[in-house]
Length: 608
Image 1 (cartoon, rainbow, N blue to C red):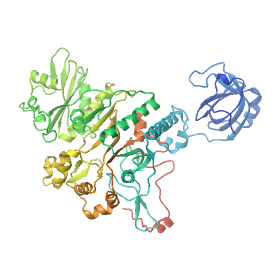
Image 2: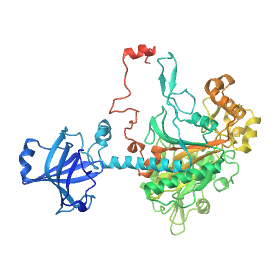
Image 3: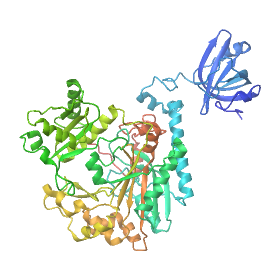
């Protein structure tokens, strides 16, 4: 073997042992006749001491950064110990060495505080992976995978592989397609998820299935998206929603314990989708801090069960509020002393294209009990006080108000809440808060087609209490302007998302398992009988042969790893990621293929 120990293994207990190490040269430092080398491998760093007797050999075969080196010597106690590394009490006094392979000068330094930018590090990703910071990310990823597999194995789940070359089926994003040489003019698709396969496995009697599996979606990218990503994909038969929630709460708590040494013993909070949208403005709220939304004005058909308190702002002839569909507010703790410059900066922040608001109003709840606002001429101080109290503001708080169209304004106040939470230090990286969001709408409205689309996917079951509403009402939307009044707008899905620190880390549902209800669902999405049979005939056929009640959940594996590792980008936790254009700059992919391959596939390229 090339080594007797790794570069992170030796300790003071190994003193006087003869040892052989192999690894990469991190640094070379000369002190007179003595040369020190830091030798690195996956496990750590060990300091090597080259005495004067090796100077001739070092002169003939000089060492450079990233050279692959084998070295044999005696373990000595270091005179100047390094408490920052596990091997810092010892060094290896070298007797002999051999250069196994030389290296060009790397394009960036292979260390945590590297001088390489994203582009150059992605081009030379095989070098970037040598850095300790990246190695720790991949170790965490492996730890999450190992913990997941152990937990699911202990709970009788089977790891069953499903195919990558499948039929194109609509699941909300574009498919990656693969031409078939043996079937000219026909194409496979890469799976966006193993959804239909895991349902078929339930029909087949494998009542607890899982995979840690690659999925593929051809969609626009950002920090938390990649064209190929990994899911912890799970399905269970003969279960109800409560069984699923309990099982996968257990999984995430096990991962916390195994990977982060956190004993997450508190009860996981639950809230409905409606409560999440009402109190936080989005369906994946960060509940590490408060600052809930005060809904001063809203469309009654959007939140039919909620109390209308618009009288607090009505009758003042303030057109900003009077003409708005929605007026919402948040009370920001301790910010009443914000200067004009600071409030102007917030106004510009909400006007950014990403937020899309025309402006921002505010009320200062001064420490002396007085109230001052940006719209004082329309409201008496008593009215400002009433609005502030409705927003649960205290002395010293700053109430921020947004007004406009319902969907945009609610999204904007949600983003503003998160931004203020970040600025005030409420979103702590080392604090983790889990949440279940339940009872999503089953359908979303597609304005461009004036029809319903599945909010999750077409296999999600409605709540049992809403099945009759779905069956007994025509899905056609007669009046596009009033789509929210259609009975289908209020059908709830038997679906659930797990949220961690304001990020959706997993989602799933109880599935439709009756053929007639599945056909009704497809029809509601605009599929006629012929299209249903063409796209999903295999599943509908399987439902005729004793399909059990079943449901499941899929975790975003990359995203979960990123959150546990304190990063906003999943790319940091993928060995060979794509850039924001979906390119692998190391391989230079995607790339063209030669004419022979086009001929074999019987495909002609016609770029527009």
